[in-house]
Image (cartoon, rainbow, N blue to C red; front, side):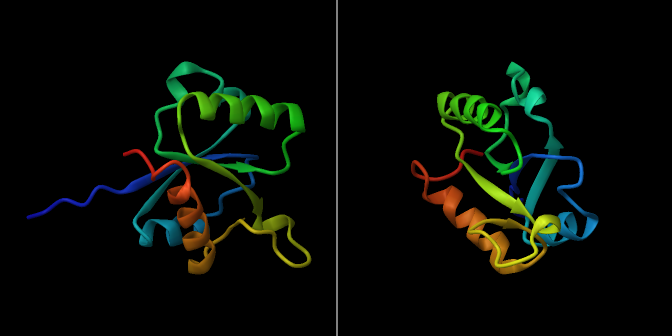
Length: 119
């Protein structure tokens, strides 16, 4: 029997970021979501042990800059997302939701960075 290794992505965002519906949809897409983690958690050395990250756009610019510098240093692919709960008009390019097209958009963009996602 062959085992399938699931892709794991860290969510760096506010506590209202991931609903049970979102987590279940990503689970069915064979992608594990970790978190949501706060920006301060990611600053610890033990925290940078995931394949990729998606970051909530609601963080202040200085916080995002620190996060992206840390992720760049570790060669961890990342992108920013707009939480589904804050969208009241056209969605941005990356939306964290249960829709398969949103899941595919995020994973494709992460895979395109630097030759793919580490496992």
